[in-house]
Length: 336
Image (cartoon, rainbow, N blue to C red; front, side):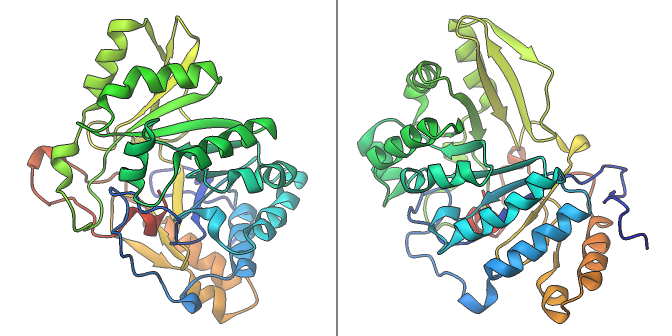
């Protein structure tokens, strides 16, 4: 097979976006993402930093133009900046158009400058509340001031920050306008995410926390003029602009919106499993071919075979009010 042929799935979608979880570990234990006493993977199962570089470089060679690094918390992985600096060469060559990450912000103060130097220009920071006590409650181990200092450092380093907030009924409903105003003041875009039915977290069933973004959007509409934006990042977000502030607000509704038609992404876990769809259990083991040979041909073949199994769409549905369509793995495993 032509080794330079781009990755095209069965529905003629070019796969140009790879999300890579570089660790399953995190320094927080957010209640909707992890159990408090998580059992983490043994080290030998994880891809080494060199293997991650080789894996991502292969995807870039096959046409992936955007890499988003996730976790767990990507910045708690030891020596992770080695990996970011390794990816800089693809940015400089022009084959990789964007290198970015999603973080809880706890380590940004330490790494913001190095990330910028490596070619990162945007970061997504997950932040659900500006209330210190509530933040400590929902993250279990997190401290809000540390995150706010990280966001300051990121902006000072020249990184564009976007805030991702999970919409949780009875938790941050009353902070909707506080979050929006805080982001507007700091020139940060804001995306709301509907809570997803993932993982057995041993705590409350997720259905009672479900806050429909339709309702959230309607509340914003009572105070602002919402203008729908046509832009799609190839991802699940729909965007509006608030006329009064010029702010861009995104809505990610995995359950009420089927955004699969234009899906251009796949996800790689820290153990080398490739998930062709976040909402499906089907995955391909890429670690075995990676470790089987120092020649990348086997790995390329495995990637191509996996992409040919990418489904048209996923199967989340709260309306059934049952566990059907609920995915059993933790969010921290696939990378938020």
